[in-house]
Image 1 (cartoon, rainbow, N blue to C red):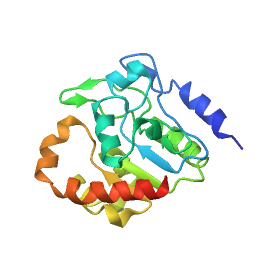
Image 2 (image 1 turned 120 degrees about the horizontal axis):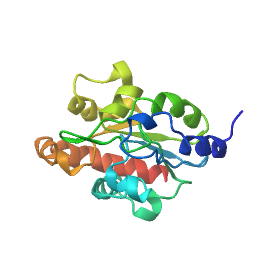
Image 3 (image 1 turned 90 degrees about the horizontal axis):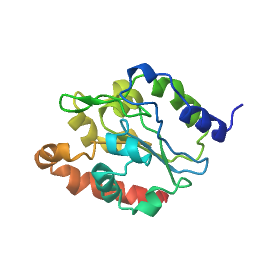
Image 4 (image 1 turned 90 degrees about the vertical axis):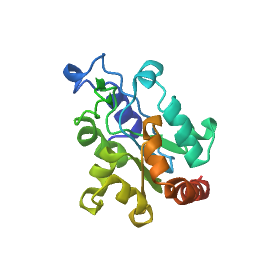
Length: 191
């Protein structure tokens, strides 16, 4: 049986999709056996690929605001694990970054998640995480799935905190009025 340190070392050395990446593989993830909250997002953006620090961008600032925590708590691996759907920057697409590479989650998530026994809340950020973890329990649209957030415990689906989603947030005021306060309460209770 593997331990988390070994699996993390192997995941960080992964080159399974190197032929399809715009840069050399740079898997970015964090986890600790004591972590109680798990964040599953899409894949690192270009800025995060350069820094090596997950969610160290405008989207991360908004995510921390939604969660009601500061950077020190967010980056405390004993509290929060960060395991995206794709570990490396996938490249630029027509309207933003490309989708996360499909190899990472099937290869690494089962190994990693089996070694995180204390996770009480898994925040599914965006459609790719929700597709994998909610599967047929998802609603017809991302908006409907996120609006039904209370039905998925211990999963908590949210939209991506990207500034590109500003229009979506304006069209869905319930997100900031209902979901964000509920998310903050859950995060505070667990941490």
